[in-house]
Each structure stands twice: as C-alpha cells, then as structure tokens.
Length: 340
Image 1: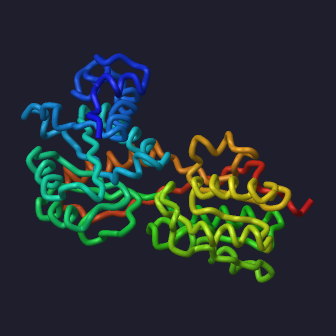
Image 2: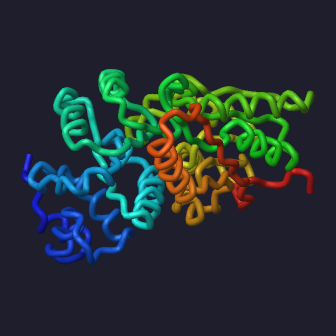
Image 3: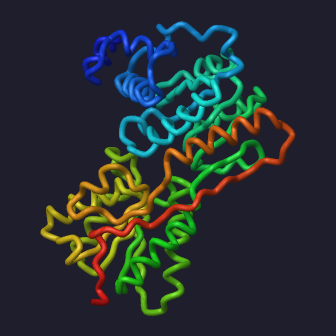
C-alpha cells in the first residue's frame, strides 16, 4: 500500500501541506472545523499517525481519546459530525482530542497500550468497541463515556444517545397520520442497540392503529457499502411485491439505497411508495424527492458527550448516567399525504 504523506492529504483537501502539518500536530492557528476535516481525512486515507510526536507531558491531563471503528469514518456520514461537536466543545475548555480508529487488522494490544501510555484524562467510545479493548480500558480506571452504543455497558460506563424509541415512534405516527395503512420497518435490528430501539418504537406506535398492517424487513444486514445495516434481497423482494405503501428506514443511508432500488424498478417516490429515514444527514435534502427524516442534532450530541465526560472526570464517585436526546421529525416530499 502506498504510504500516505502530508502532501497527499493536502492535495486531497485542497489546502497547504503546512496547514495539514499544523493541524495534525495540534499547534495553534487552525480552526476546529478545519482541524476536524484534516484529521478525519488523514484517518480515512490511512495516514501513519505514529510519525507525529506524542503530546508534551504537560498536555496529557487535558487529553481525551475518541475511539471509533475505522469503517464508520469511511462509509458513515453520521459520526464525523458528532466528532466535530466533541472537538468544538473541547476547544472551549482547552482540551485536546485524539481520534483513534480500529479495524479487523488492528493489533489490539498495541491499541490499548498506546492509549494507556498517553495517560489521557478520559475516553469517548463511539458505537462499539472490541471486548478485549473495552475490558482492558475498564481495568485502567480511565473515565469513559459510550455514544450510541451497540451494547449498553450499564455497570461500567456513562452512555449518551438520542431517544431512538420515542423519536421513531413519532416518525411512525407521522407516516400513519398521512394515511398509510401498509408500512414496513427496514434495518438489521441486530446491527445496533439504536436500530432495535427504533424498531420497538415503530411496533408500539403501529399497535395503536388496528387497521395498519406491518412488515418487518429486519434480516441480518449484508450490504458492506453501508456497513451491513440492511438485507439487500429482502428489501428488493418487498419492493417488487408492491404490498407496502411506506418504508420507515432505520437510517438515511438505507433510505438512499431504497431510492436507488426503486428507480431501477420503476417505482416512484412518493406516488407509489413513501419513504422516511433517520439522522437527517446532509444528503437527505438533495435527494429527489427530498427525504423526510428524523433530525439527530449531531453537533449537540457531541457537545453533550464532551460535557458528560468532563463531569465524570471531576466526579468519579457519581452514579452512572444515561443521557437521552429527543429528535425532531422533518417533514419532506418523500412522504405523500394519502388522506387528500
């Protein structure tokens, strides 16, 4: 594999090599937004961060690590925005953020030892982490917080997430109130705790309407392009059967895939089927038609995550907390009003 250089990162982003060097070295003179873009691009391109000198000992007490799965930074439009929220808040309080990604080829022993050796003040875990890493970090006694975890480590760690159940309940009610009687949930519910909570919100809302027919497209995901969050064949078969009026997708990425499938098979959105997603990612507004979705305040989630970790660092003896953030349904043209 070709070695990634500072110049390659600079060319990719259309900035100077010097700016990239300053951003990756945590020197002054770079905005939080620009620093985030450069760091995330460097991770995605496979830059070797071991070439960057470790922070001075005097800064270690103000260092937080953000741990994430490498593929989520490559394929997910959701997490980079939350990381930017974390970094913007860190800047206000003179903290440094290090993003450290892992994949199936990561040497887990070295991954853990690098974190512990830096003697950081706290750790933010995004979505999931291998049990080996988590268990060793628990033993290190470093304060941690989990964001939108696939597993809820209630006995060991504070958690922060959106209120997936209530938010998707409201999204389902919005679709049903627009006259849809045959509705489907799309998403692998084993993929994440958040997906399962959205699925439960969907079911509990539908139960309030005796004349609504429910279809569950929740088989194990198999589309690696969007990290295996839905089953391709199951969704395609449902579209071809034409028995569903509205598809409620566990996230916007699934909805985007559904749009492409529908176009291939001559199915019009919203005249033939309505579609709603979850996350309100940047591309949702530009889709044709614009995608109805649920807005996750990603920057706010990141900011609150940072604040919660600072509180945990200051008050190690406080009871563990779970923070839930409500989301708002965004009404757009992909959901047709069938009552008219």
